[in-house]
Image (cartoon, rainbow, N blue to C red; front, side, top):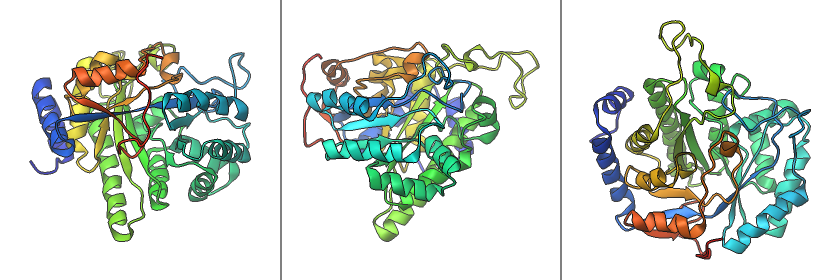
Length: 376
């Protein structure tokens, strides 16, 4: 089968049953990654602030600066969160937060530098395109320069969060204060041009159509083509290391209560527009991602949003990686979804699916260090 076009992808998604789509995706995964091993990473999410000027309609985590629950972690608090990660055998953090206008740029540089000073081997993955665009806008600084300075301070790779669906007419409905689709892509383009890698994501199952999901995949694939071509020419360009998709969580947010007419949907006035995605839709979208994104090596499961059982099944629907141990998770939990696993349970999910669990680094290579197998 050749490379799918958008129209072919849409037709395949609509006409192909869950089992058949899963088998096709699994065949591609086994061709790319073999039949024996599937990976995981020990990582800690550190959400440094929940103060956010954007206040997306799907977000249950962010608050205004005057809220009683507002917080910004100190540099010391952030560093303390890394200690249990290192003790468990992890070497990677995901550092993300709200768009907080009260934080100066040198605060970010100090955090990154302090983390690297304490743990030179620590891989710092974080600061999504939305955060980088926000910093550039408030500082009057070019996005490329923002990335350069963050990289110099210690940021290793850029997180793929904030992508949602990369279709602006939809973004204006669910996250009107966030960066545009083109801005998100431009951050990743500049990131790759500077030799840094990044991840890519999609949040679906809200107001979008299946066609818009495929459009999102096409946008990601097109930039990956561009980045890989540049990498082939100069050997130094970065690229998307992985793709993850997950369904919108409805709890405690404005979008979860949305029942008004959406002009882009084409549906009759008054008809509820949310098209929530359950487990079957999650597996189908995961499989479709593996088939469509032929230039991204790794597809990661999302057990945090769908639970361990669906995370495990994802290993048979196109995923070669079950994702992170997720020592700490605040954003999805704020929407009412609170699945938790210890390291032994995460490894067992992979074994019970018929594979050998292998701890990896950010670049999906076997880790040179190894976490414990205790049920901490």
